[in-house]
Length: 616
View 1 (cartoon, rainbow, N blue to C red):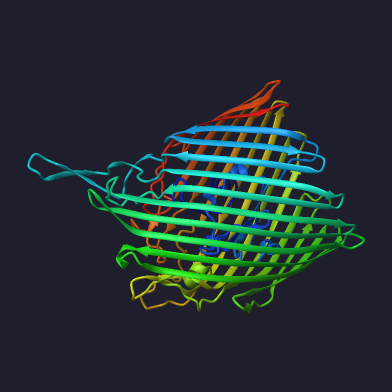
View 2 (spheres, rainbow, N blue to C red; view 1 turned 30 degrees about the horizontal axis):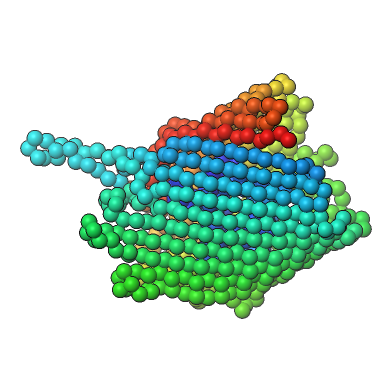
């Protein structure tokens, strides 16, 4: 999903490398300010407060809605930047049995397999999905952080060069399985149950500044996660009622072992985390008799149980850092939507949260939409909201460094924009949108070094995040078998520290926040001719700074880069099955780039996919 969002949206995707942590951020905020849900179940880790999108297979997602700014308050609070709503669906009723299988083979001994078996019946519909991905991930790269000396006959250094190295400790194997079942209990009642299991083993690649030799270490992360959710929906006239219950269990293990001698290995780090979350949610929607008013009210309860420990060899194999806490969260919401006529719509959302035995102030959001033309081709939208983001459990309790006295981040957000969409003819369709946004966030949480030698989070900053988001899309069908589609996005996102200096030497005030690009863009273009489809993907991120002072130095910034992918697909229709063969070239121009400092990234690489869907 990280790759899908990078090339099909204007949000910033920050990646630590292939099959490593990938996070997304809206409108100049941080990844912890992005809320992620799947079928109504929260995906964000209560420990870290963020979501790793590299662990979400794109073929496990049937729908992905991106809610920017104030619109995210329709589902929950805390998403100061925006939210990502992922959903999966069962087949349509009476669609019968279907089967699909995809096999992928790529560079670096990469193998991808995906199987889906689905059934759509009169009362029961079900879908079973399995995805397995594995790779040695041993790509080669030029290490710009190291230099090798070239010696002359007299032993003097005559020149230097950057060595060509292999990505070390980067192998991974991910297994995902998902089951969706929908049952029509009665004409007005529906029960939906979904379960998603993840098993993952990933080696963590070493930094480009590490001089270790392979075999001198083991750096491995294991994850086992179960997400299960059941929802019941009842429709009675103008009233719709939904109840949902869910459970999440996650086991995260991390081990770092290093050789003390050729025959002696020492486990330097042994981290164990166990996370359980219980969810209960209920909501009702009521339309007025004339359908001009919609009233909504809901309540949601979440209970987290987290046990985390970290054993270090420096502590004689004793537990050196641990916390075991439970945290309850309660959220109440009410909203009203009013459509006085066919061209104007207004909505008001009010929320209030109970977090750590403290009620938040009232959280409001006011949004309005207006069709400026009679045919609805040109619309205007605007919103204003106040939002709160609560510290993660690691922010509060991580040992050492957690700060239980942290305050919630909070701020006002405003946006306004125009959207235009029109079919110019039977063969040409165009759409465009542009949105200006402005957010001022106080008590921004930042982890800072302490005199005791470790980092600790503090409420230190006031941040002004503002800018423009734009999208242009076009579709052209010059002939019956030809079609060209283009979808492009651009974001201008200054995110500036406007707080007070922490010391006379503090040079962070007035500077762009670390790892947030001011400019980002993406484009996807596809050309279809008969059974052939040619797809080109492109994305760009401007310079990102690694330090709050925005220093343009070797380690203080990451240069801008452009990334290009191309794919060619051939569809084959037979009486017994629909098939396709797809060839993909990633990093088409063999770009040398970094998304995170000292994290190697692969050059040009290739993949081939074969898919088959039998006809019954």
